[in-house]
Image 1 (tube, rainbow, N blue to C red):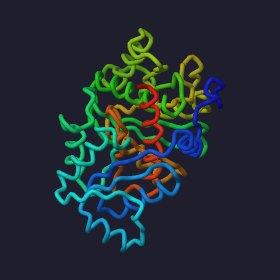
Image 2 (tube, rainbow, N blue to C red):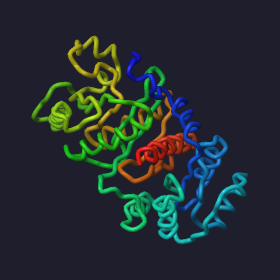
Image 3 (spheres, rainbow, N blue to C red):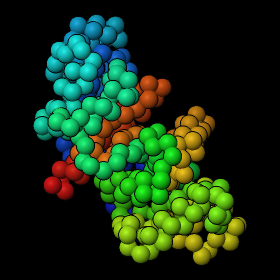
Length: 314
């Protein structure tokens, strides 16, 4: 079910990547770049004219790994910083100072990486809470899905969920989607005081109606089938709902629900996806080591589009 008001939006990841060509090649600073999967991703991203990279880390190890996987790094800038913590701070400062457009995790644990993101002097904090967004192109669904939060905030409060929506709206805007439909998900479609997720969903819906969460349409609580399947919505008689199987943003009640759906989609469905950390001054590429090279490249493409949107907004 295509929606006419979204004529300019990206409906597939291919269309999303095509947008990168309109905004010019960006630059990503990689923290602790001595990682084969990351080197393969930044090489592919450069070949596809998505992004150039500054590789920060142990130069000898970076070159050794590159030789092992037969990657020529002669066109890449390498900054030799052997200490992991210092490498991360050096890389994030490049983004903070405007010398790079995006920040990407390399061979560093997530806690150390996020510490650099939040560094008071060199980091990318904005004062807003951070959250994580996964963008999915799913076969059988005619528009992109934005899943949040599947990796960062374990048990979001009502206030957290407002911030998560606001952060995600910045991503949908960058992807050309105006007034996206947000589905706060739960197991049922009606409010049950014994099920806090449904209470939060109803409050978010009311806040949206009251103008406290502008720039989108919030309708919850909604079960997953009503959120993404128009036929299910029709069969259940949900004709009075603002969302009838055409949600853009899937807001999960907690990290368990989000992570389980994310992994189920990645491992059982035909999907193309990319992930980004939001609520920061610049896009932060935080992918899992189990993510494929293509997911990493897609995440860089998503980051490049967001970086261009931030640039145009300033």
